[in-house]
Image 1 (cartoon, rainbow over the protein chains, first blue to last red):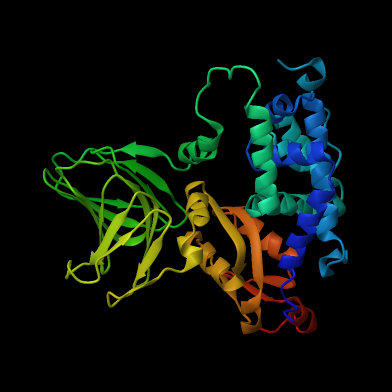
Image 2: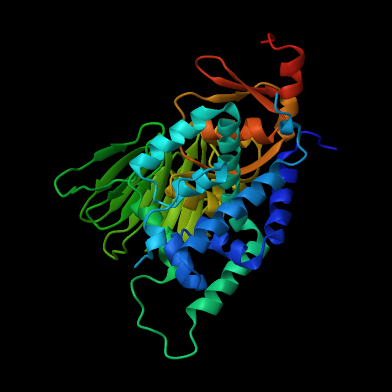
Amino acid sequence: MDELAFMEPARERLRSALQQLPARARRAFLLHRLEGLSHAEVAERLGVPVSVVGQDVREALAHLKRAVLAGGPWKSTT
Amino acid sequence: MTGPEEDREPTPRTAEGWVTREHSGRMTAGDRRALIEWLAQSPENTRDYTRADVVWRMCGGLSSMPEVQAELEDIRRSVTVPEALPPPEKGTPRRHWLWLIALSLPLAAAVVIWYARTPSTELVTAPGEQRSVTLADGSLVAMNTDTRLRVELGRRSRLVTVENGEALFQITPDGDRPFTVRARQAMLRAVGTRFDVMVESKQVTVAVLDGEVEVSRRNEPEAARTIVHQGEAVALSGDGELTRADPLLASADRIRAWRAGKLDFDDWPLERVVRDHNRYAVKPIRVADASLQRLHVSGVFRIGDTTALLDAMRELTPLAVRDEGDEFVLVPLAAERENPERR
């Protein structure tokens, strides 16, 4: 009905994309992004090397970006 | 502390690599030069970087989703409660951590002011400015953008008048000296409490985060008197009527966000987003088309970062942005395509 409300679909896509992430990557991303923990602190929490946290956070963001931007009118690269 | 592989992280090669590097707190001067070079390599890099950045900001809004809260709670429980004896608590418990960060943000530079011999002191912030002030009685006043306060601390009373804008009060109890806040028609009496007062034209919104506050009409303290409890909010209109507070303005999330120097919109109507942004901005945003009023948006932005807000609008909504010199105007993308010259 409200064809202008694209932001809400974007948020829904973000939500479902988050659930598609592997558990470790999702946890690393949430702890870093929302709780403000550094990569080193996240690594300690989850018991993985710091380099893995960096990679998880990066790949999580890449996945969420692809999901959020998929299919909208903003996709046209003109 | 860190293994050899973490000592020198490789230079990012992707947009999300750069965005996460920037937020890791490990961005070096060399990285910054490399980023500028990388962005200049192709318009696609710049575009991709903007998108990754927009999504990073959007993710700030994940914290309001119940399943995300549940997962974080899970992690907290599973990791912070060891089976053996708990280790001695180092520093502050995690729960309070974000709030402390908010208090220590550099933009809220704390100032201690002594009023002992000053009958009345005026405190002002400019648009976009925030400031934290510790009063001589130990009470803390955090001032939001474009705010004017008058402070009078006497031997028997403490009075702060909110002439304009918004302030968050954290009151130090003192049985001998009641703490009163005046704003337009509203008079508030507080005892050891934390509450937010916002003046928007003639309306006053009071939201209580801790403790309770007695709200009454300024000239008739016995009339319309009400107690506002923790987690509640009321509004007082220009003619002194008590009304329900606008839930968007009264939300604890909004107050926490501004204290942290952020705008946090969770499904806000576009018109409100723009109005809130404009409180902080030197160059305002205007919504040109009434049909856009129904558009709802979500996101978290740094206060004063108009560019990021407009980027998000461009990327994630069917809106175009026109820079008209003294203001930005939001128009439907379709209208802009059909008739770019239309005013």
